[in-house]
Image (tube, rainbow, N blue to C red; front, side, top):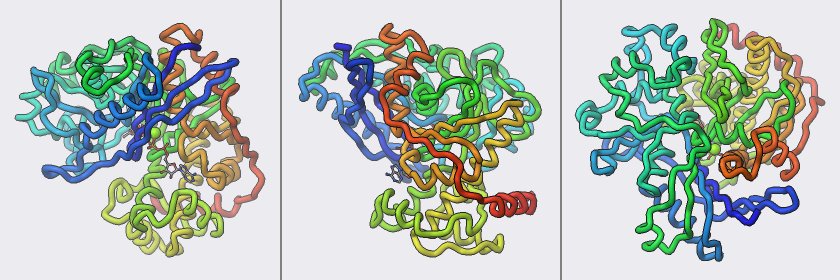
Length: 484
Ligand SMILES: Nc1ncnc2c1ncn2[C@@H]1O[C@H](COP(=O)(O)OP(=O)(O)O)[C@@H](O)[C@H]1O
Ligand SMILES: C[C@H](O)[C@H](O)[C@@H](O)C(=O)COP(=O)(O)O
Ligand SMILES: [Mg+2]
């Protein structure tokens, strides 16, 4: 492949530009640029620094040019649900508010007093999370919303500032909980509940749509290569699923990053009563698929612990400390709302254990093992529920993302879920981003061919169940019953 592909993958904790090369039927990824992401309190809300993210993309592209590459194809994927309000002149009206901001507290109960949860789920098939765009817009500053010409989801906004072209890519648009499954459009009733018209959003496009060239003024101002921007599966989890090296039909994925997104890929959405009761979501995937998944709190909890130790321990050091601690010494519902954005994760974990009569973790290793153990218990529980809802026997769990680097957690998950775990690639999101651009360019035929390339290119590790945690699993079920 004499073409160069760049993935811009911006997760909640970090962003990266990854350069792909294809030789002898194998893809290699080179990290060109990595930068921190995160939100800060600005003007009364937790906000992302969207200009910083734009500047880091430019900085990464300048490095590509300095490396002697004059022409690239680029895709952008980021976290979901959050948006930028843009005026008629295309200027942002404010920095985007983070989904972890408290402004949407109790918004679901308020909005669903007007239109029932059952009706919203029948229309959209999307999980109820208070941070969904639907509730953010419901709580948005109405004057600012009126002043806005367009609502742009974060990756679409970043594509817009690079090219001047505005679109709304569907994998990420589905996370708003405003897309109607049957119509394939923003639902008119939900829009009217918000006092919005459909043209408040740019036109919907499928993943893999060519967006346009980078603006000439950016190229000259920053000495950048020629850049063709393709709107890929712009929800990072959608790209992660594309990049999952799955084979056959009985597989589940765990996109393990700031969030743990556990689910499987469907050809037809599943928004029946069982899925509704279990709060599973039908986020749209690339190529007409659906990502039937559940959000689990994820490595966010470890990120917070690491931050509270002022970065004294790297993530691998924390995993090493955790490996010296017996697993499953306490039971914690990792999806308890208190863990979404606590002032102190350590205090939240310890208070939870006090309240529920569980052994209180104290040391860094005990805290991280408590998180790993209860993430793995939650994964095991959800895999069982996933199989029941879909009536299928799931035999393999593909773990991708940064969390797939944690051998201890991969093994614990295999043991507790009694399932084969295949770990990697850790940068599956970036890989999936590039695969969609390659399919658009005709460099790859389709999704199965793309996933074969992933299997042929990246070292994957397999973990078979080998330790018996029957007692912990029984204890966890009792703990869950007590929570009800
Ligand atoms: N070598 C490692 N050892 C332990 N944990 C790791 C390692 N590498 C990554 N992680 C975990 O993966 C997380 C980052 O995953 P990543 O997919 O990059 O997140 P995101 O895309 O949400 O920014 C870190 O917060 C950390 O918990
Ligand atoms: C808020 C959403 O649920 C979140 O964006 C999730 O869908 C996601 O994609 C998180 O990706 P990370 O790479 O930040 O874990
Ligand atoms: Mg990510």
